[in-house]
Amino acid sequence: MSYISKKDREDIPAMAPLLDLVESSMGFVPNSMLTMAHWPELLGTFGSLAATVLQTGEVDGQLKQLIAMISSRAQGCNYCQAHTAHSAHRAGAEQEKIVAVFDFEQSPLFSAKEREALRFGWFASLQPNAVEPQQFEMLRAFYSEREIVEIVAVISLFGFLNRWNDTLATKLEPNAANFGHEVLSSSGWSRGKH
Image 1 (cartoon, rainbow, N blue to C red):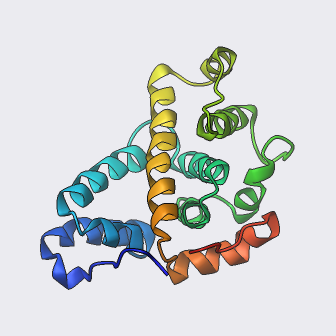
Image 2: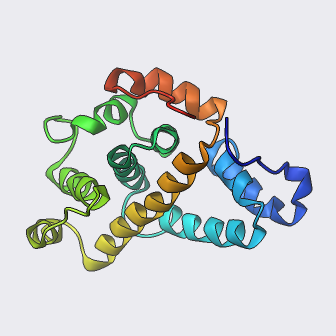
Image 3: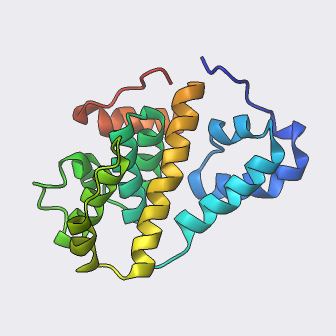
């Protein structure tokens, strides 16, 4: 059970355009956003930031979601792992690639370029941050500085979301929970406290 109640959409009519956009992108409105709605300015700002980070830029949207999955796994946030798996699928990632993401170092499904971004995502999400100068050099072999900024933005966005959802024990929505159970349970994922 979540420690903070979620707002009903009817109670936040000013947020309707944002919530409609999120629903069209994800297939549902995340409970995390409905808890943020207790502070409407936060929800609006977060919505803009998340849309910029995840839906614009030069780095492929599927890869951004897979980086977010790795980052969320490093932080132990089951809620965000289920969300990002579901979102990666909606962005066009094949299910077998989503299942294999936690084994990206050995899986033949990932290119050297993808491995580098996923490895960077893992190390940047550890506590304390474990990124070393050589990892930036390895990332630069595949990505421009603009793309590296996008990768770091994904990791940073999910640092916020991982803490938000784990701290509040945000209830996992049925769409994401079912997808997580079907696709990620073989990799050790569970609903956890969500």
